[in-house]
Image (cartoon, rainbow, N blue to C red; front, side, top):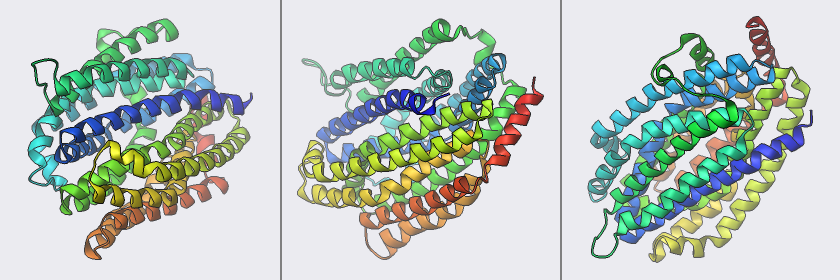
Length: 450
């Protein structure tokens, strides 16, 4: 099998899918900022809370993708379908729990992030309005993972384009009103998002039927299937643990930014939106590498998997650095879409140049960690990376950003140091072939299931 065209065939729809997601977030941030910089900060703070809650989906999402690709690579479509059905039930429970947490615990979650007094009253109703979307996101995320594992990346792209188009079409009138109606403000963004997620769920159900011949039964939406979920948890729990440690460590840095005031929080938010563009190709490459490596491991082609990851990493490093540099150069103009505050534009511009240093380390992490997970080596990333995330990311953010008074540049330096340290550790793991015993163990489990 030729890994090069398969990797590209999966990567480009993923890249466009992520690009649309970033574009919608970009537009949402810009529209929120039009209301005020306080509204822009509230929008960013709420999205960070949702990202923290979304970590729980990784228990299902990360494990489902790997288990499906390995089974499909080994020719076990029956087991792959059973895992797909199990993912729906697990998503219902996880999504329902996170939705309730956002709805009932909005005040506590915002306090956890040191929400400034002038920002919290705007962030609270937005977070509560977005809470139901977490359940829809859980279902859509799992169903999209199943489609990608079946190499149906173009179909998933179609769903995401339709979803984001609905969101964009509804966002402006619901936020700013039509005619004499003044609109719902930030809550209008949440209503538009709920509508878009419902459309995506309907399209996923249609494509499951047409492309995969999978029609969920009523019990699939709530039943927890232990046998299938045990295999998912074997990969998903370490992956989720890694994401939880990272997100909690990152929340420390957001807390530091919040302690610097609403202007610093807005600056952080606007810089994050622009730097997200540079992250796209690395994420697309990492996710596509995970899918192809999973198929290769399932088929027993370990040598091809090793070569593919080298190719993917080289490509990801070159493009992510180039895009980050272009984003930094365009920063002074792009940032004016969010704000006219000269101090915010200047400070965010400094952060964009620091991102050029950050992105190569992040690409190491994204590509190699996904490959290790696809090979069955899921525990090493969290065990090796936890100390760096806690000490370098969280501790460094406090030390450089608050204690030494470096402010937001101190946070970005801590981000870069953490990404580089973890990235080099992951690359050493891959190059020394320490993942091979885990890949062979995965093959033995697949053979034993026949």
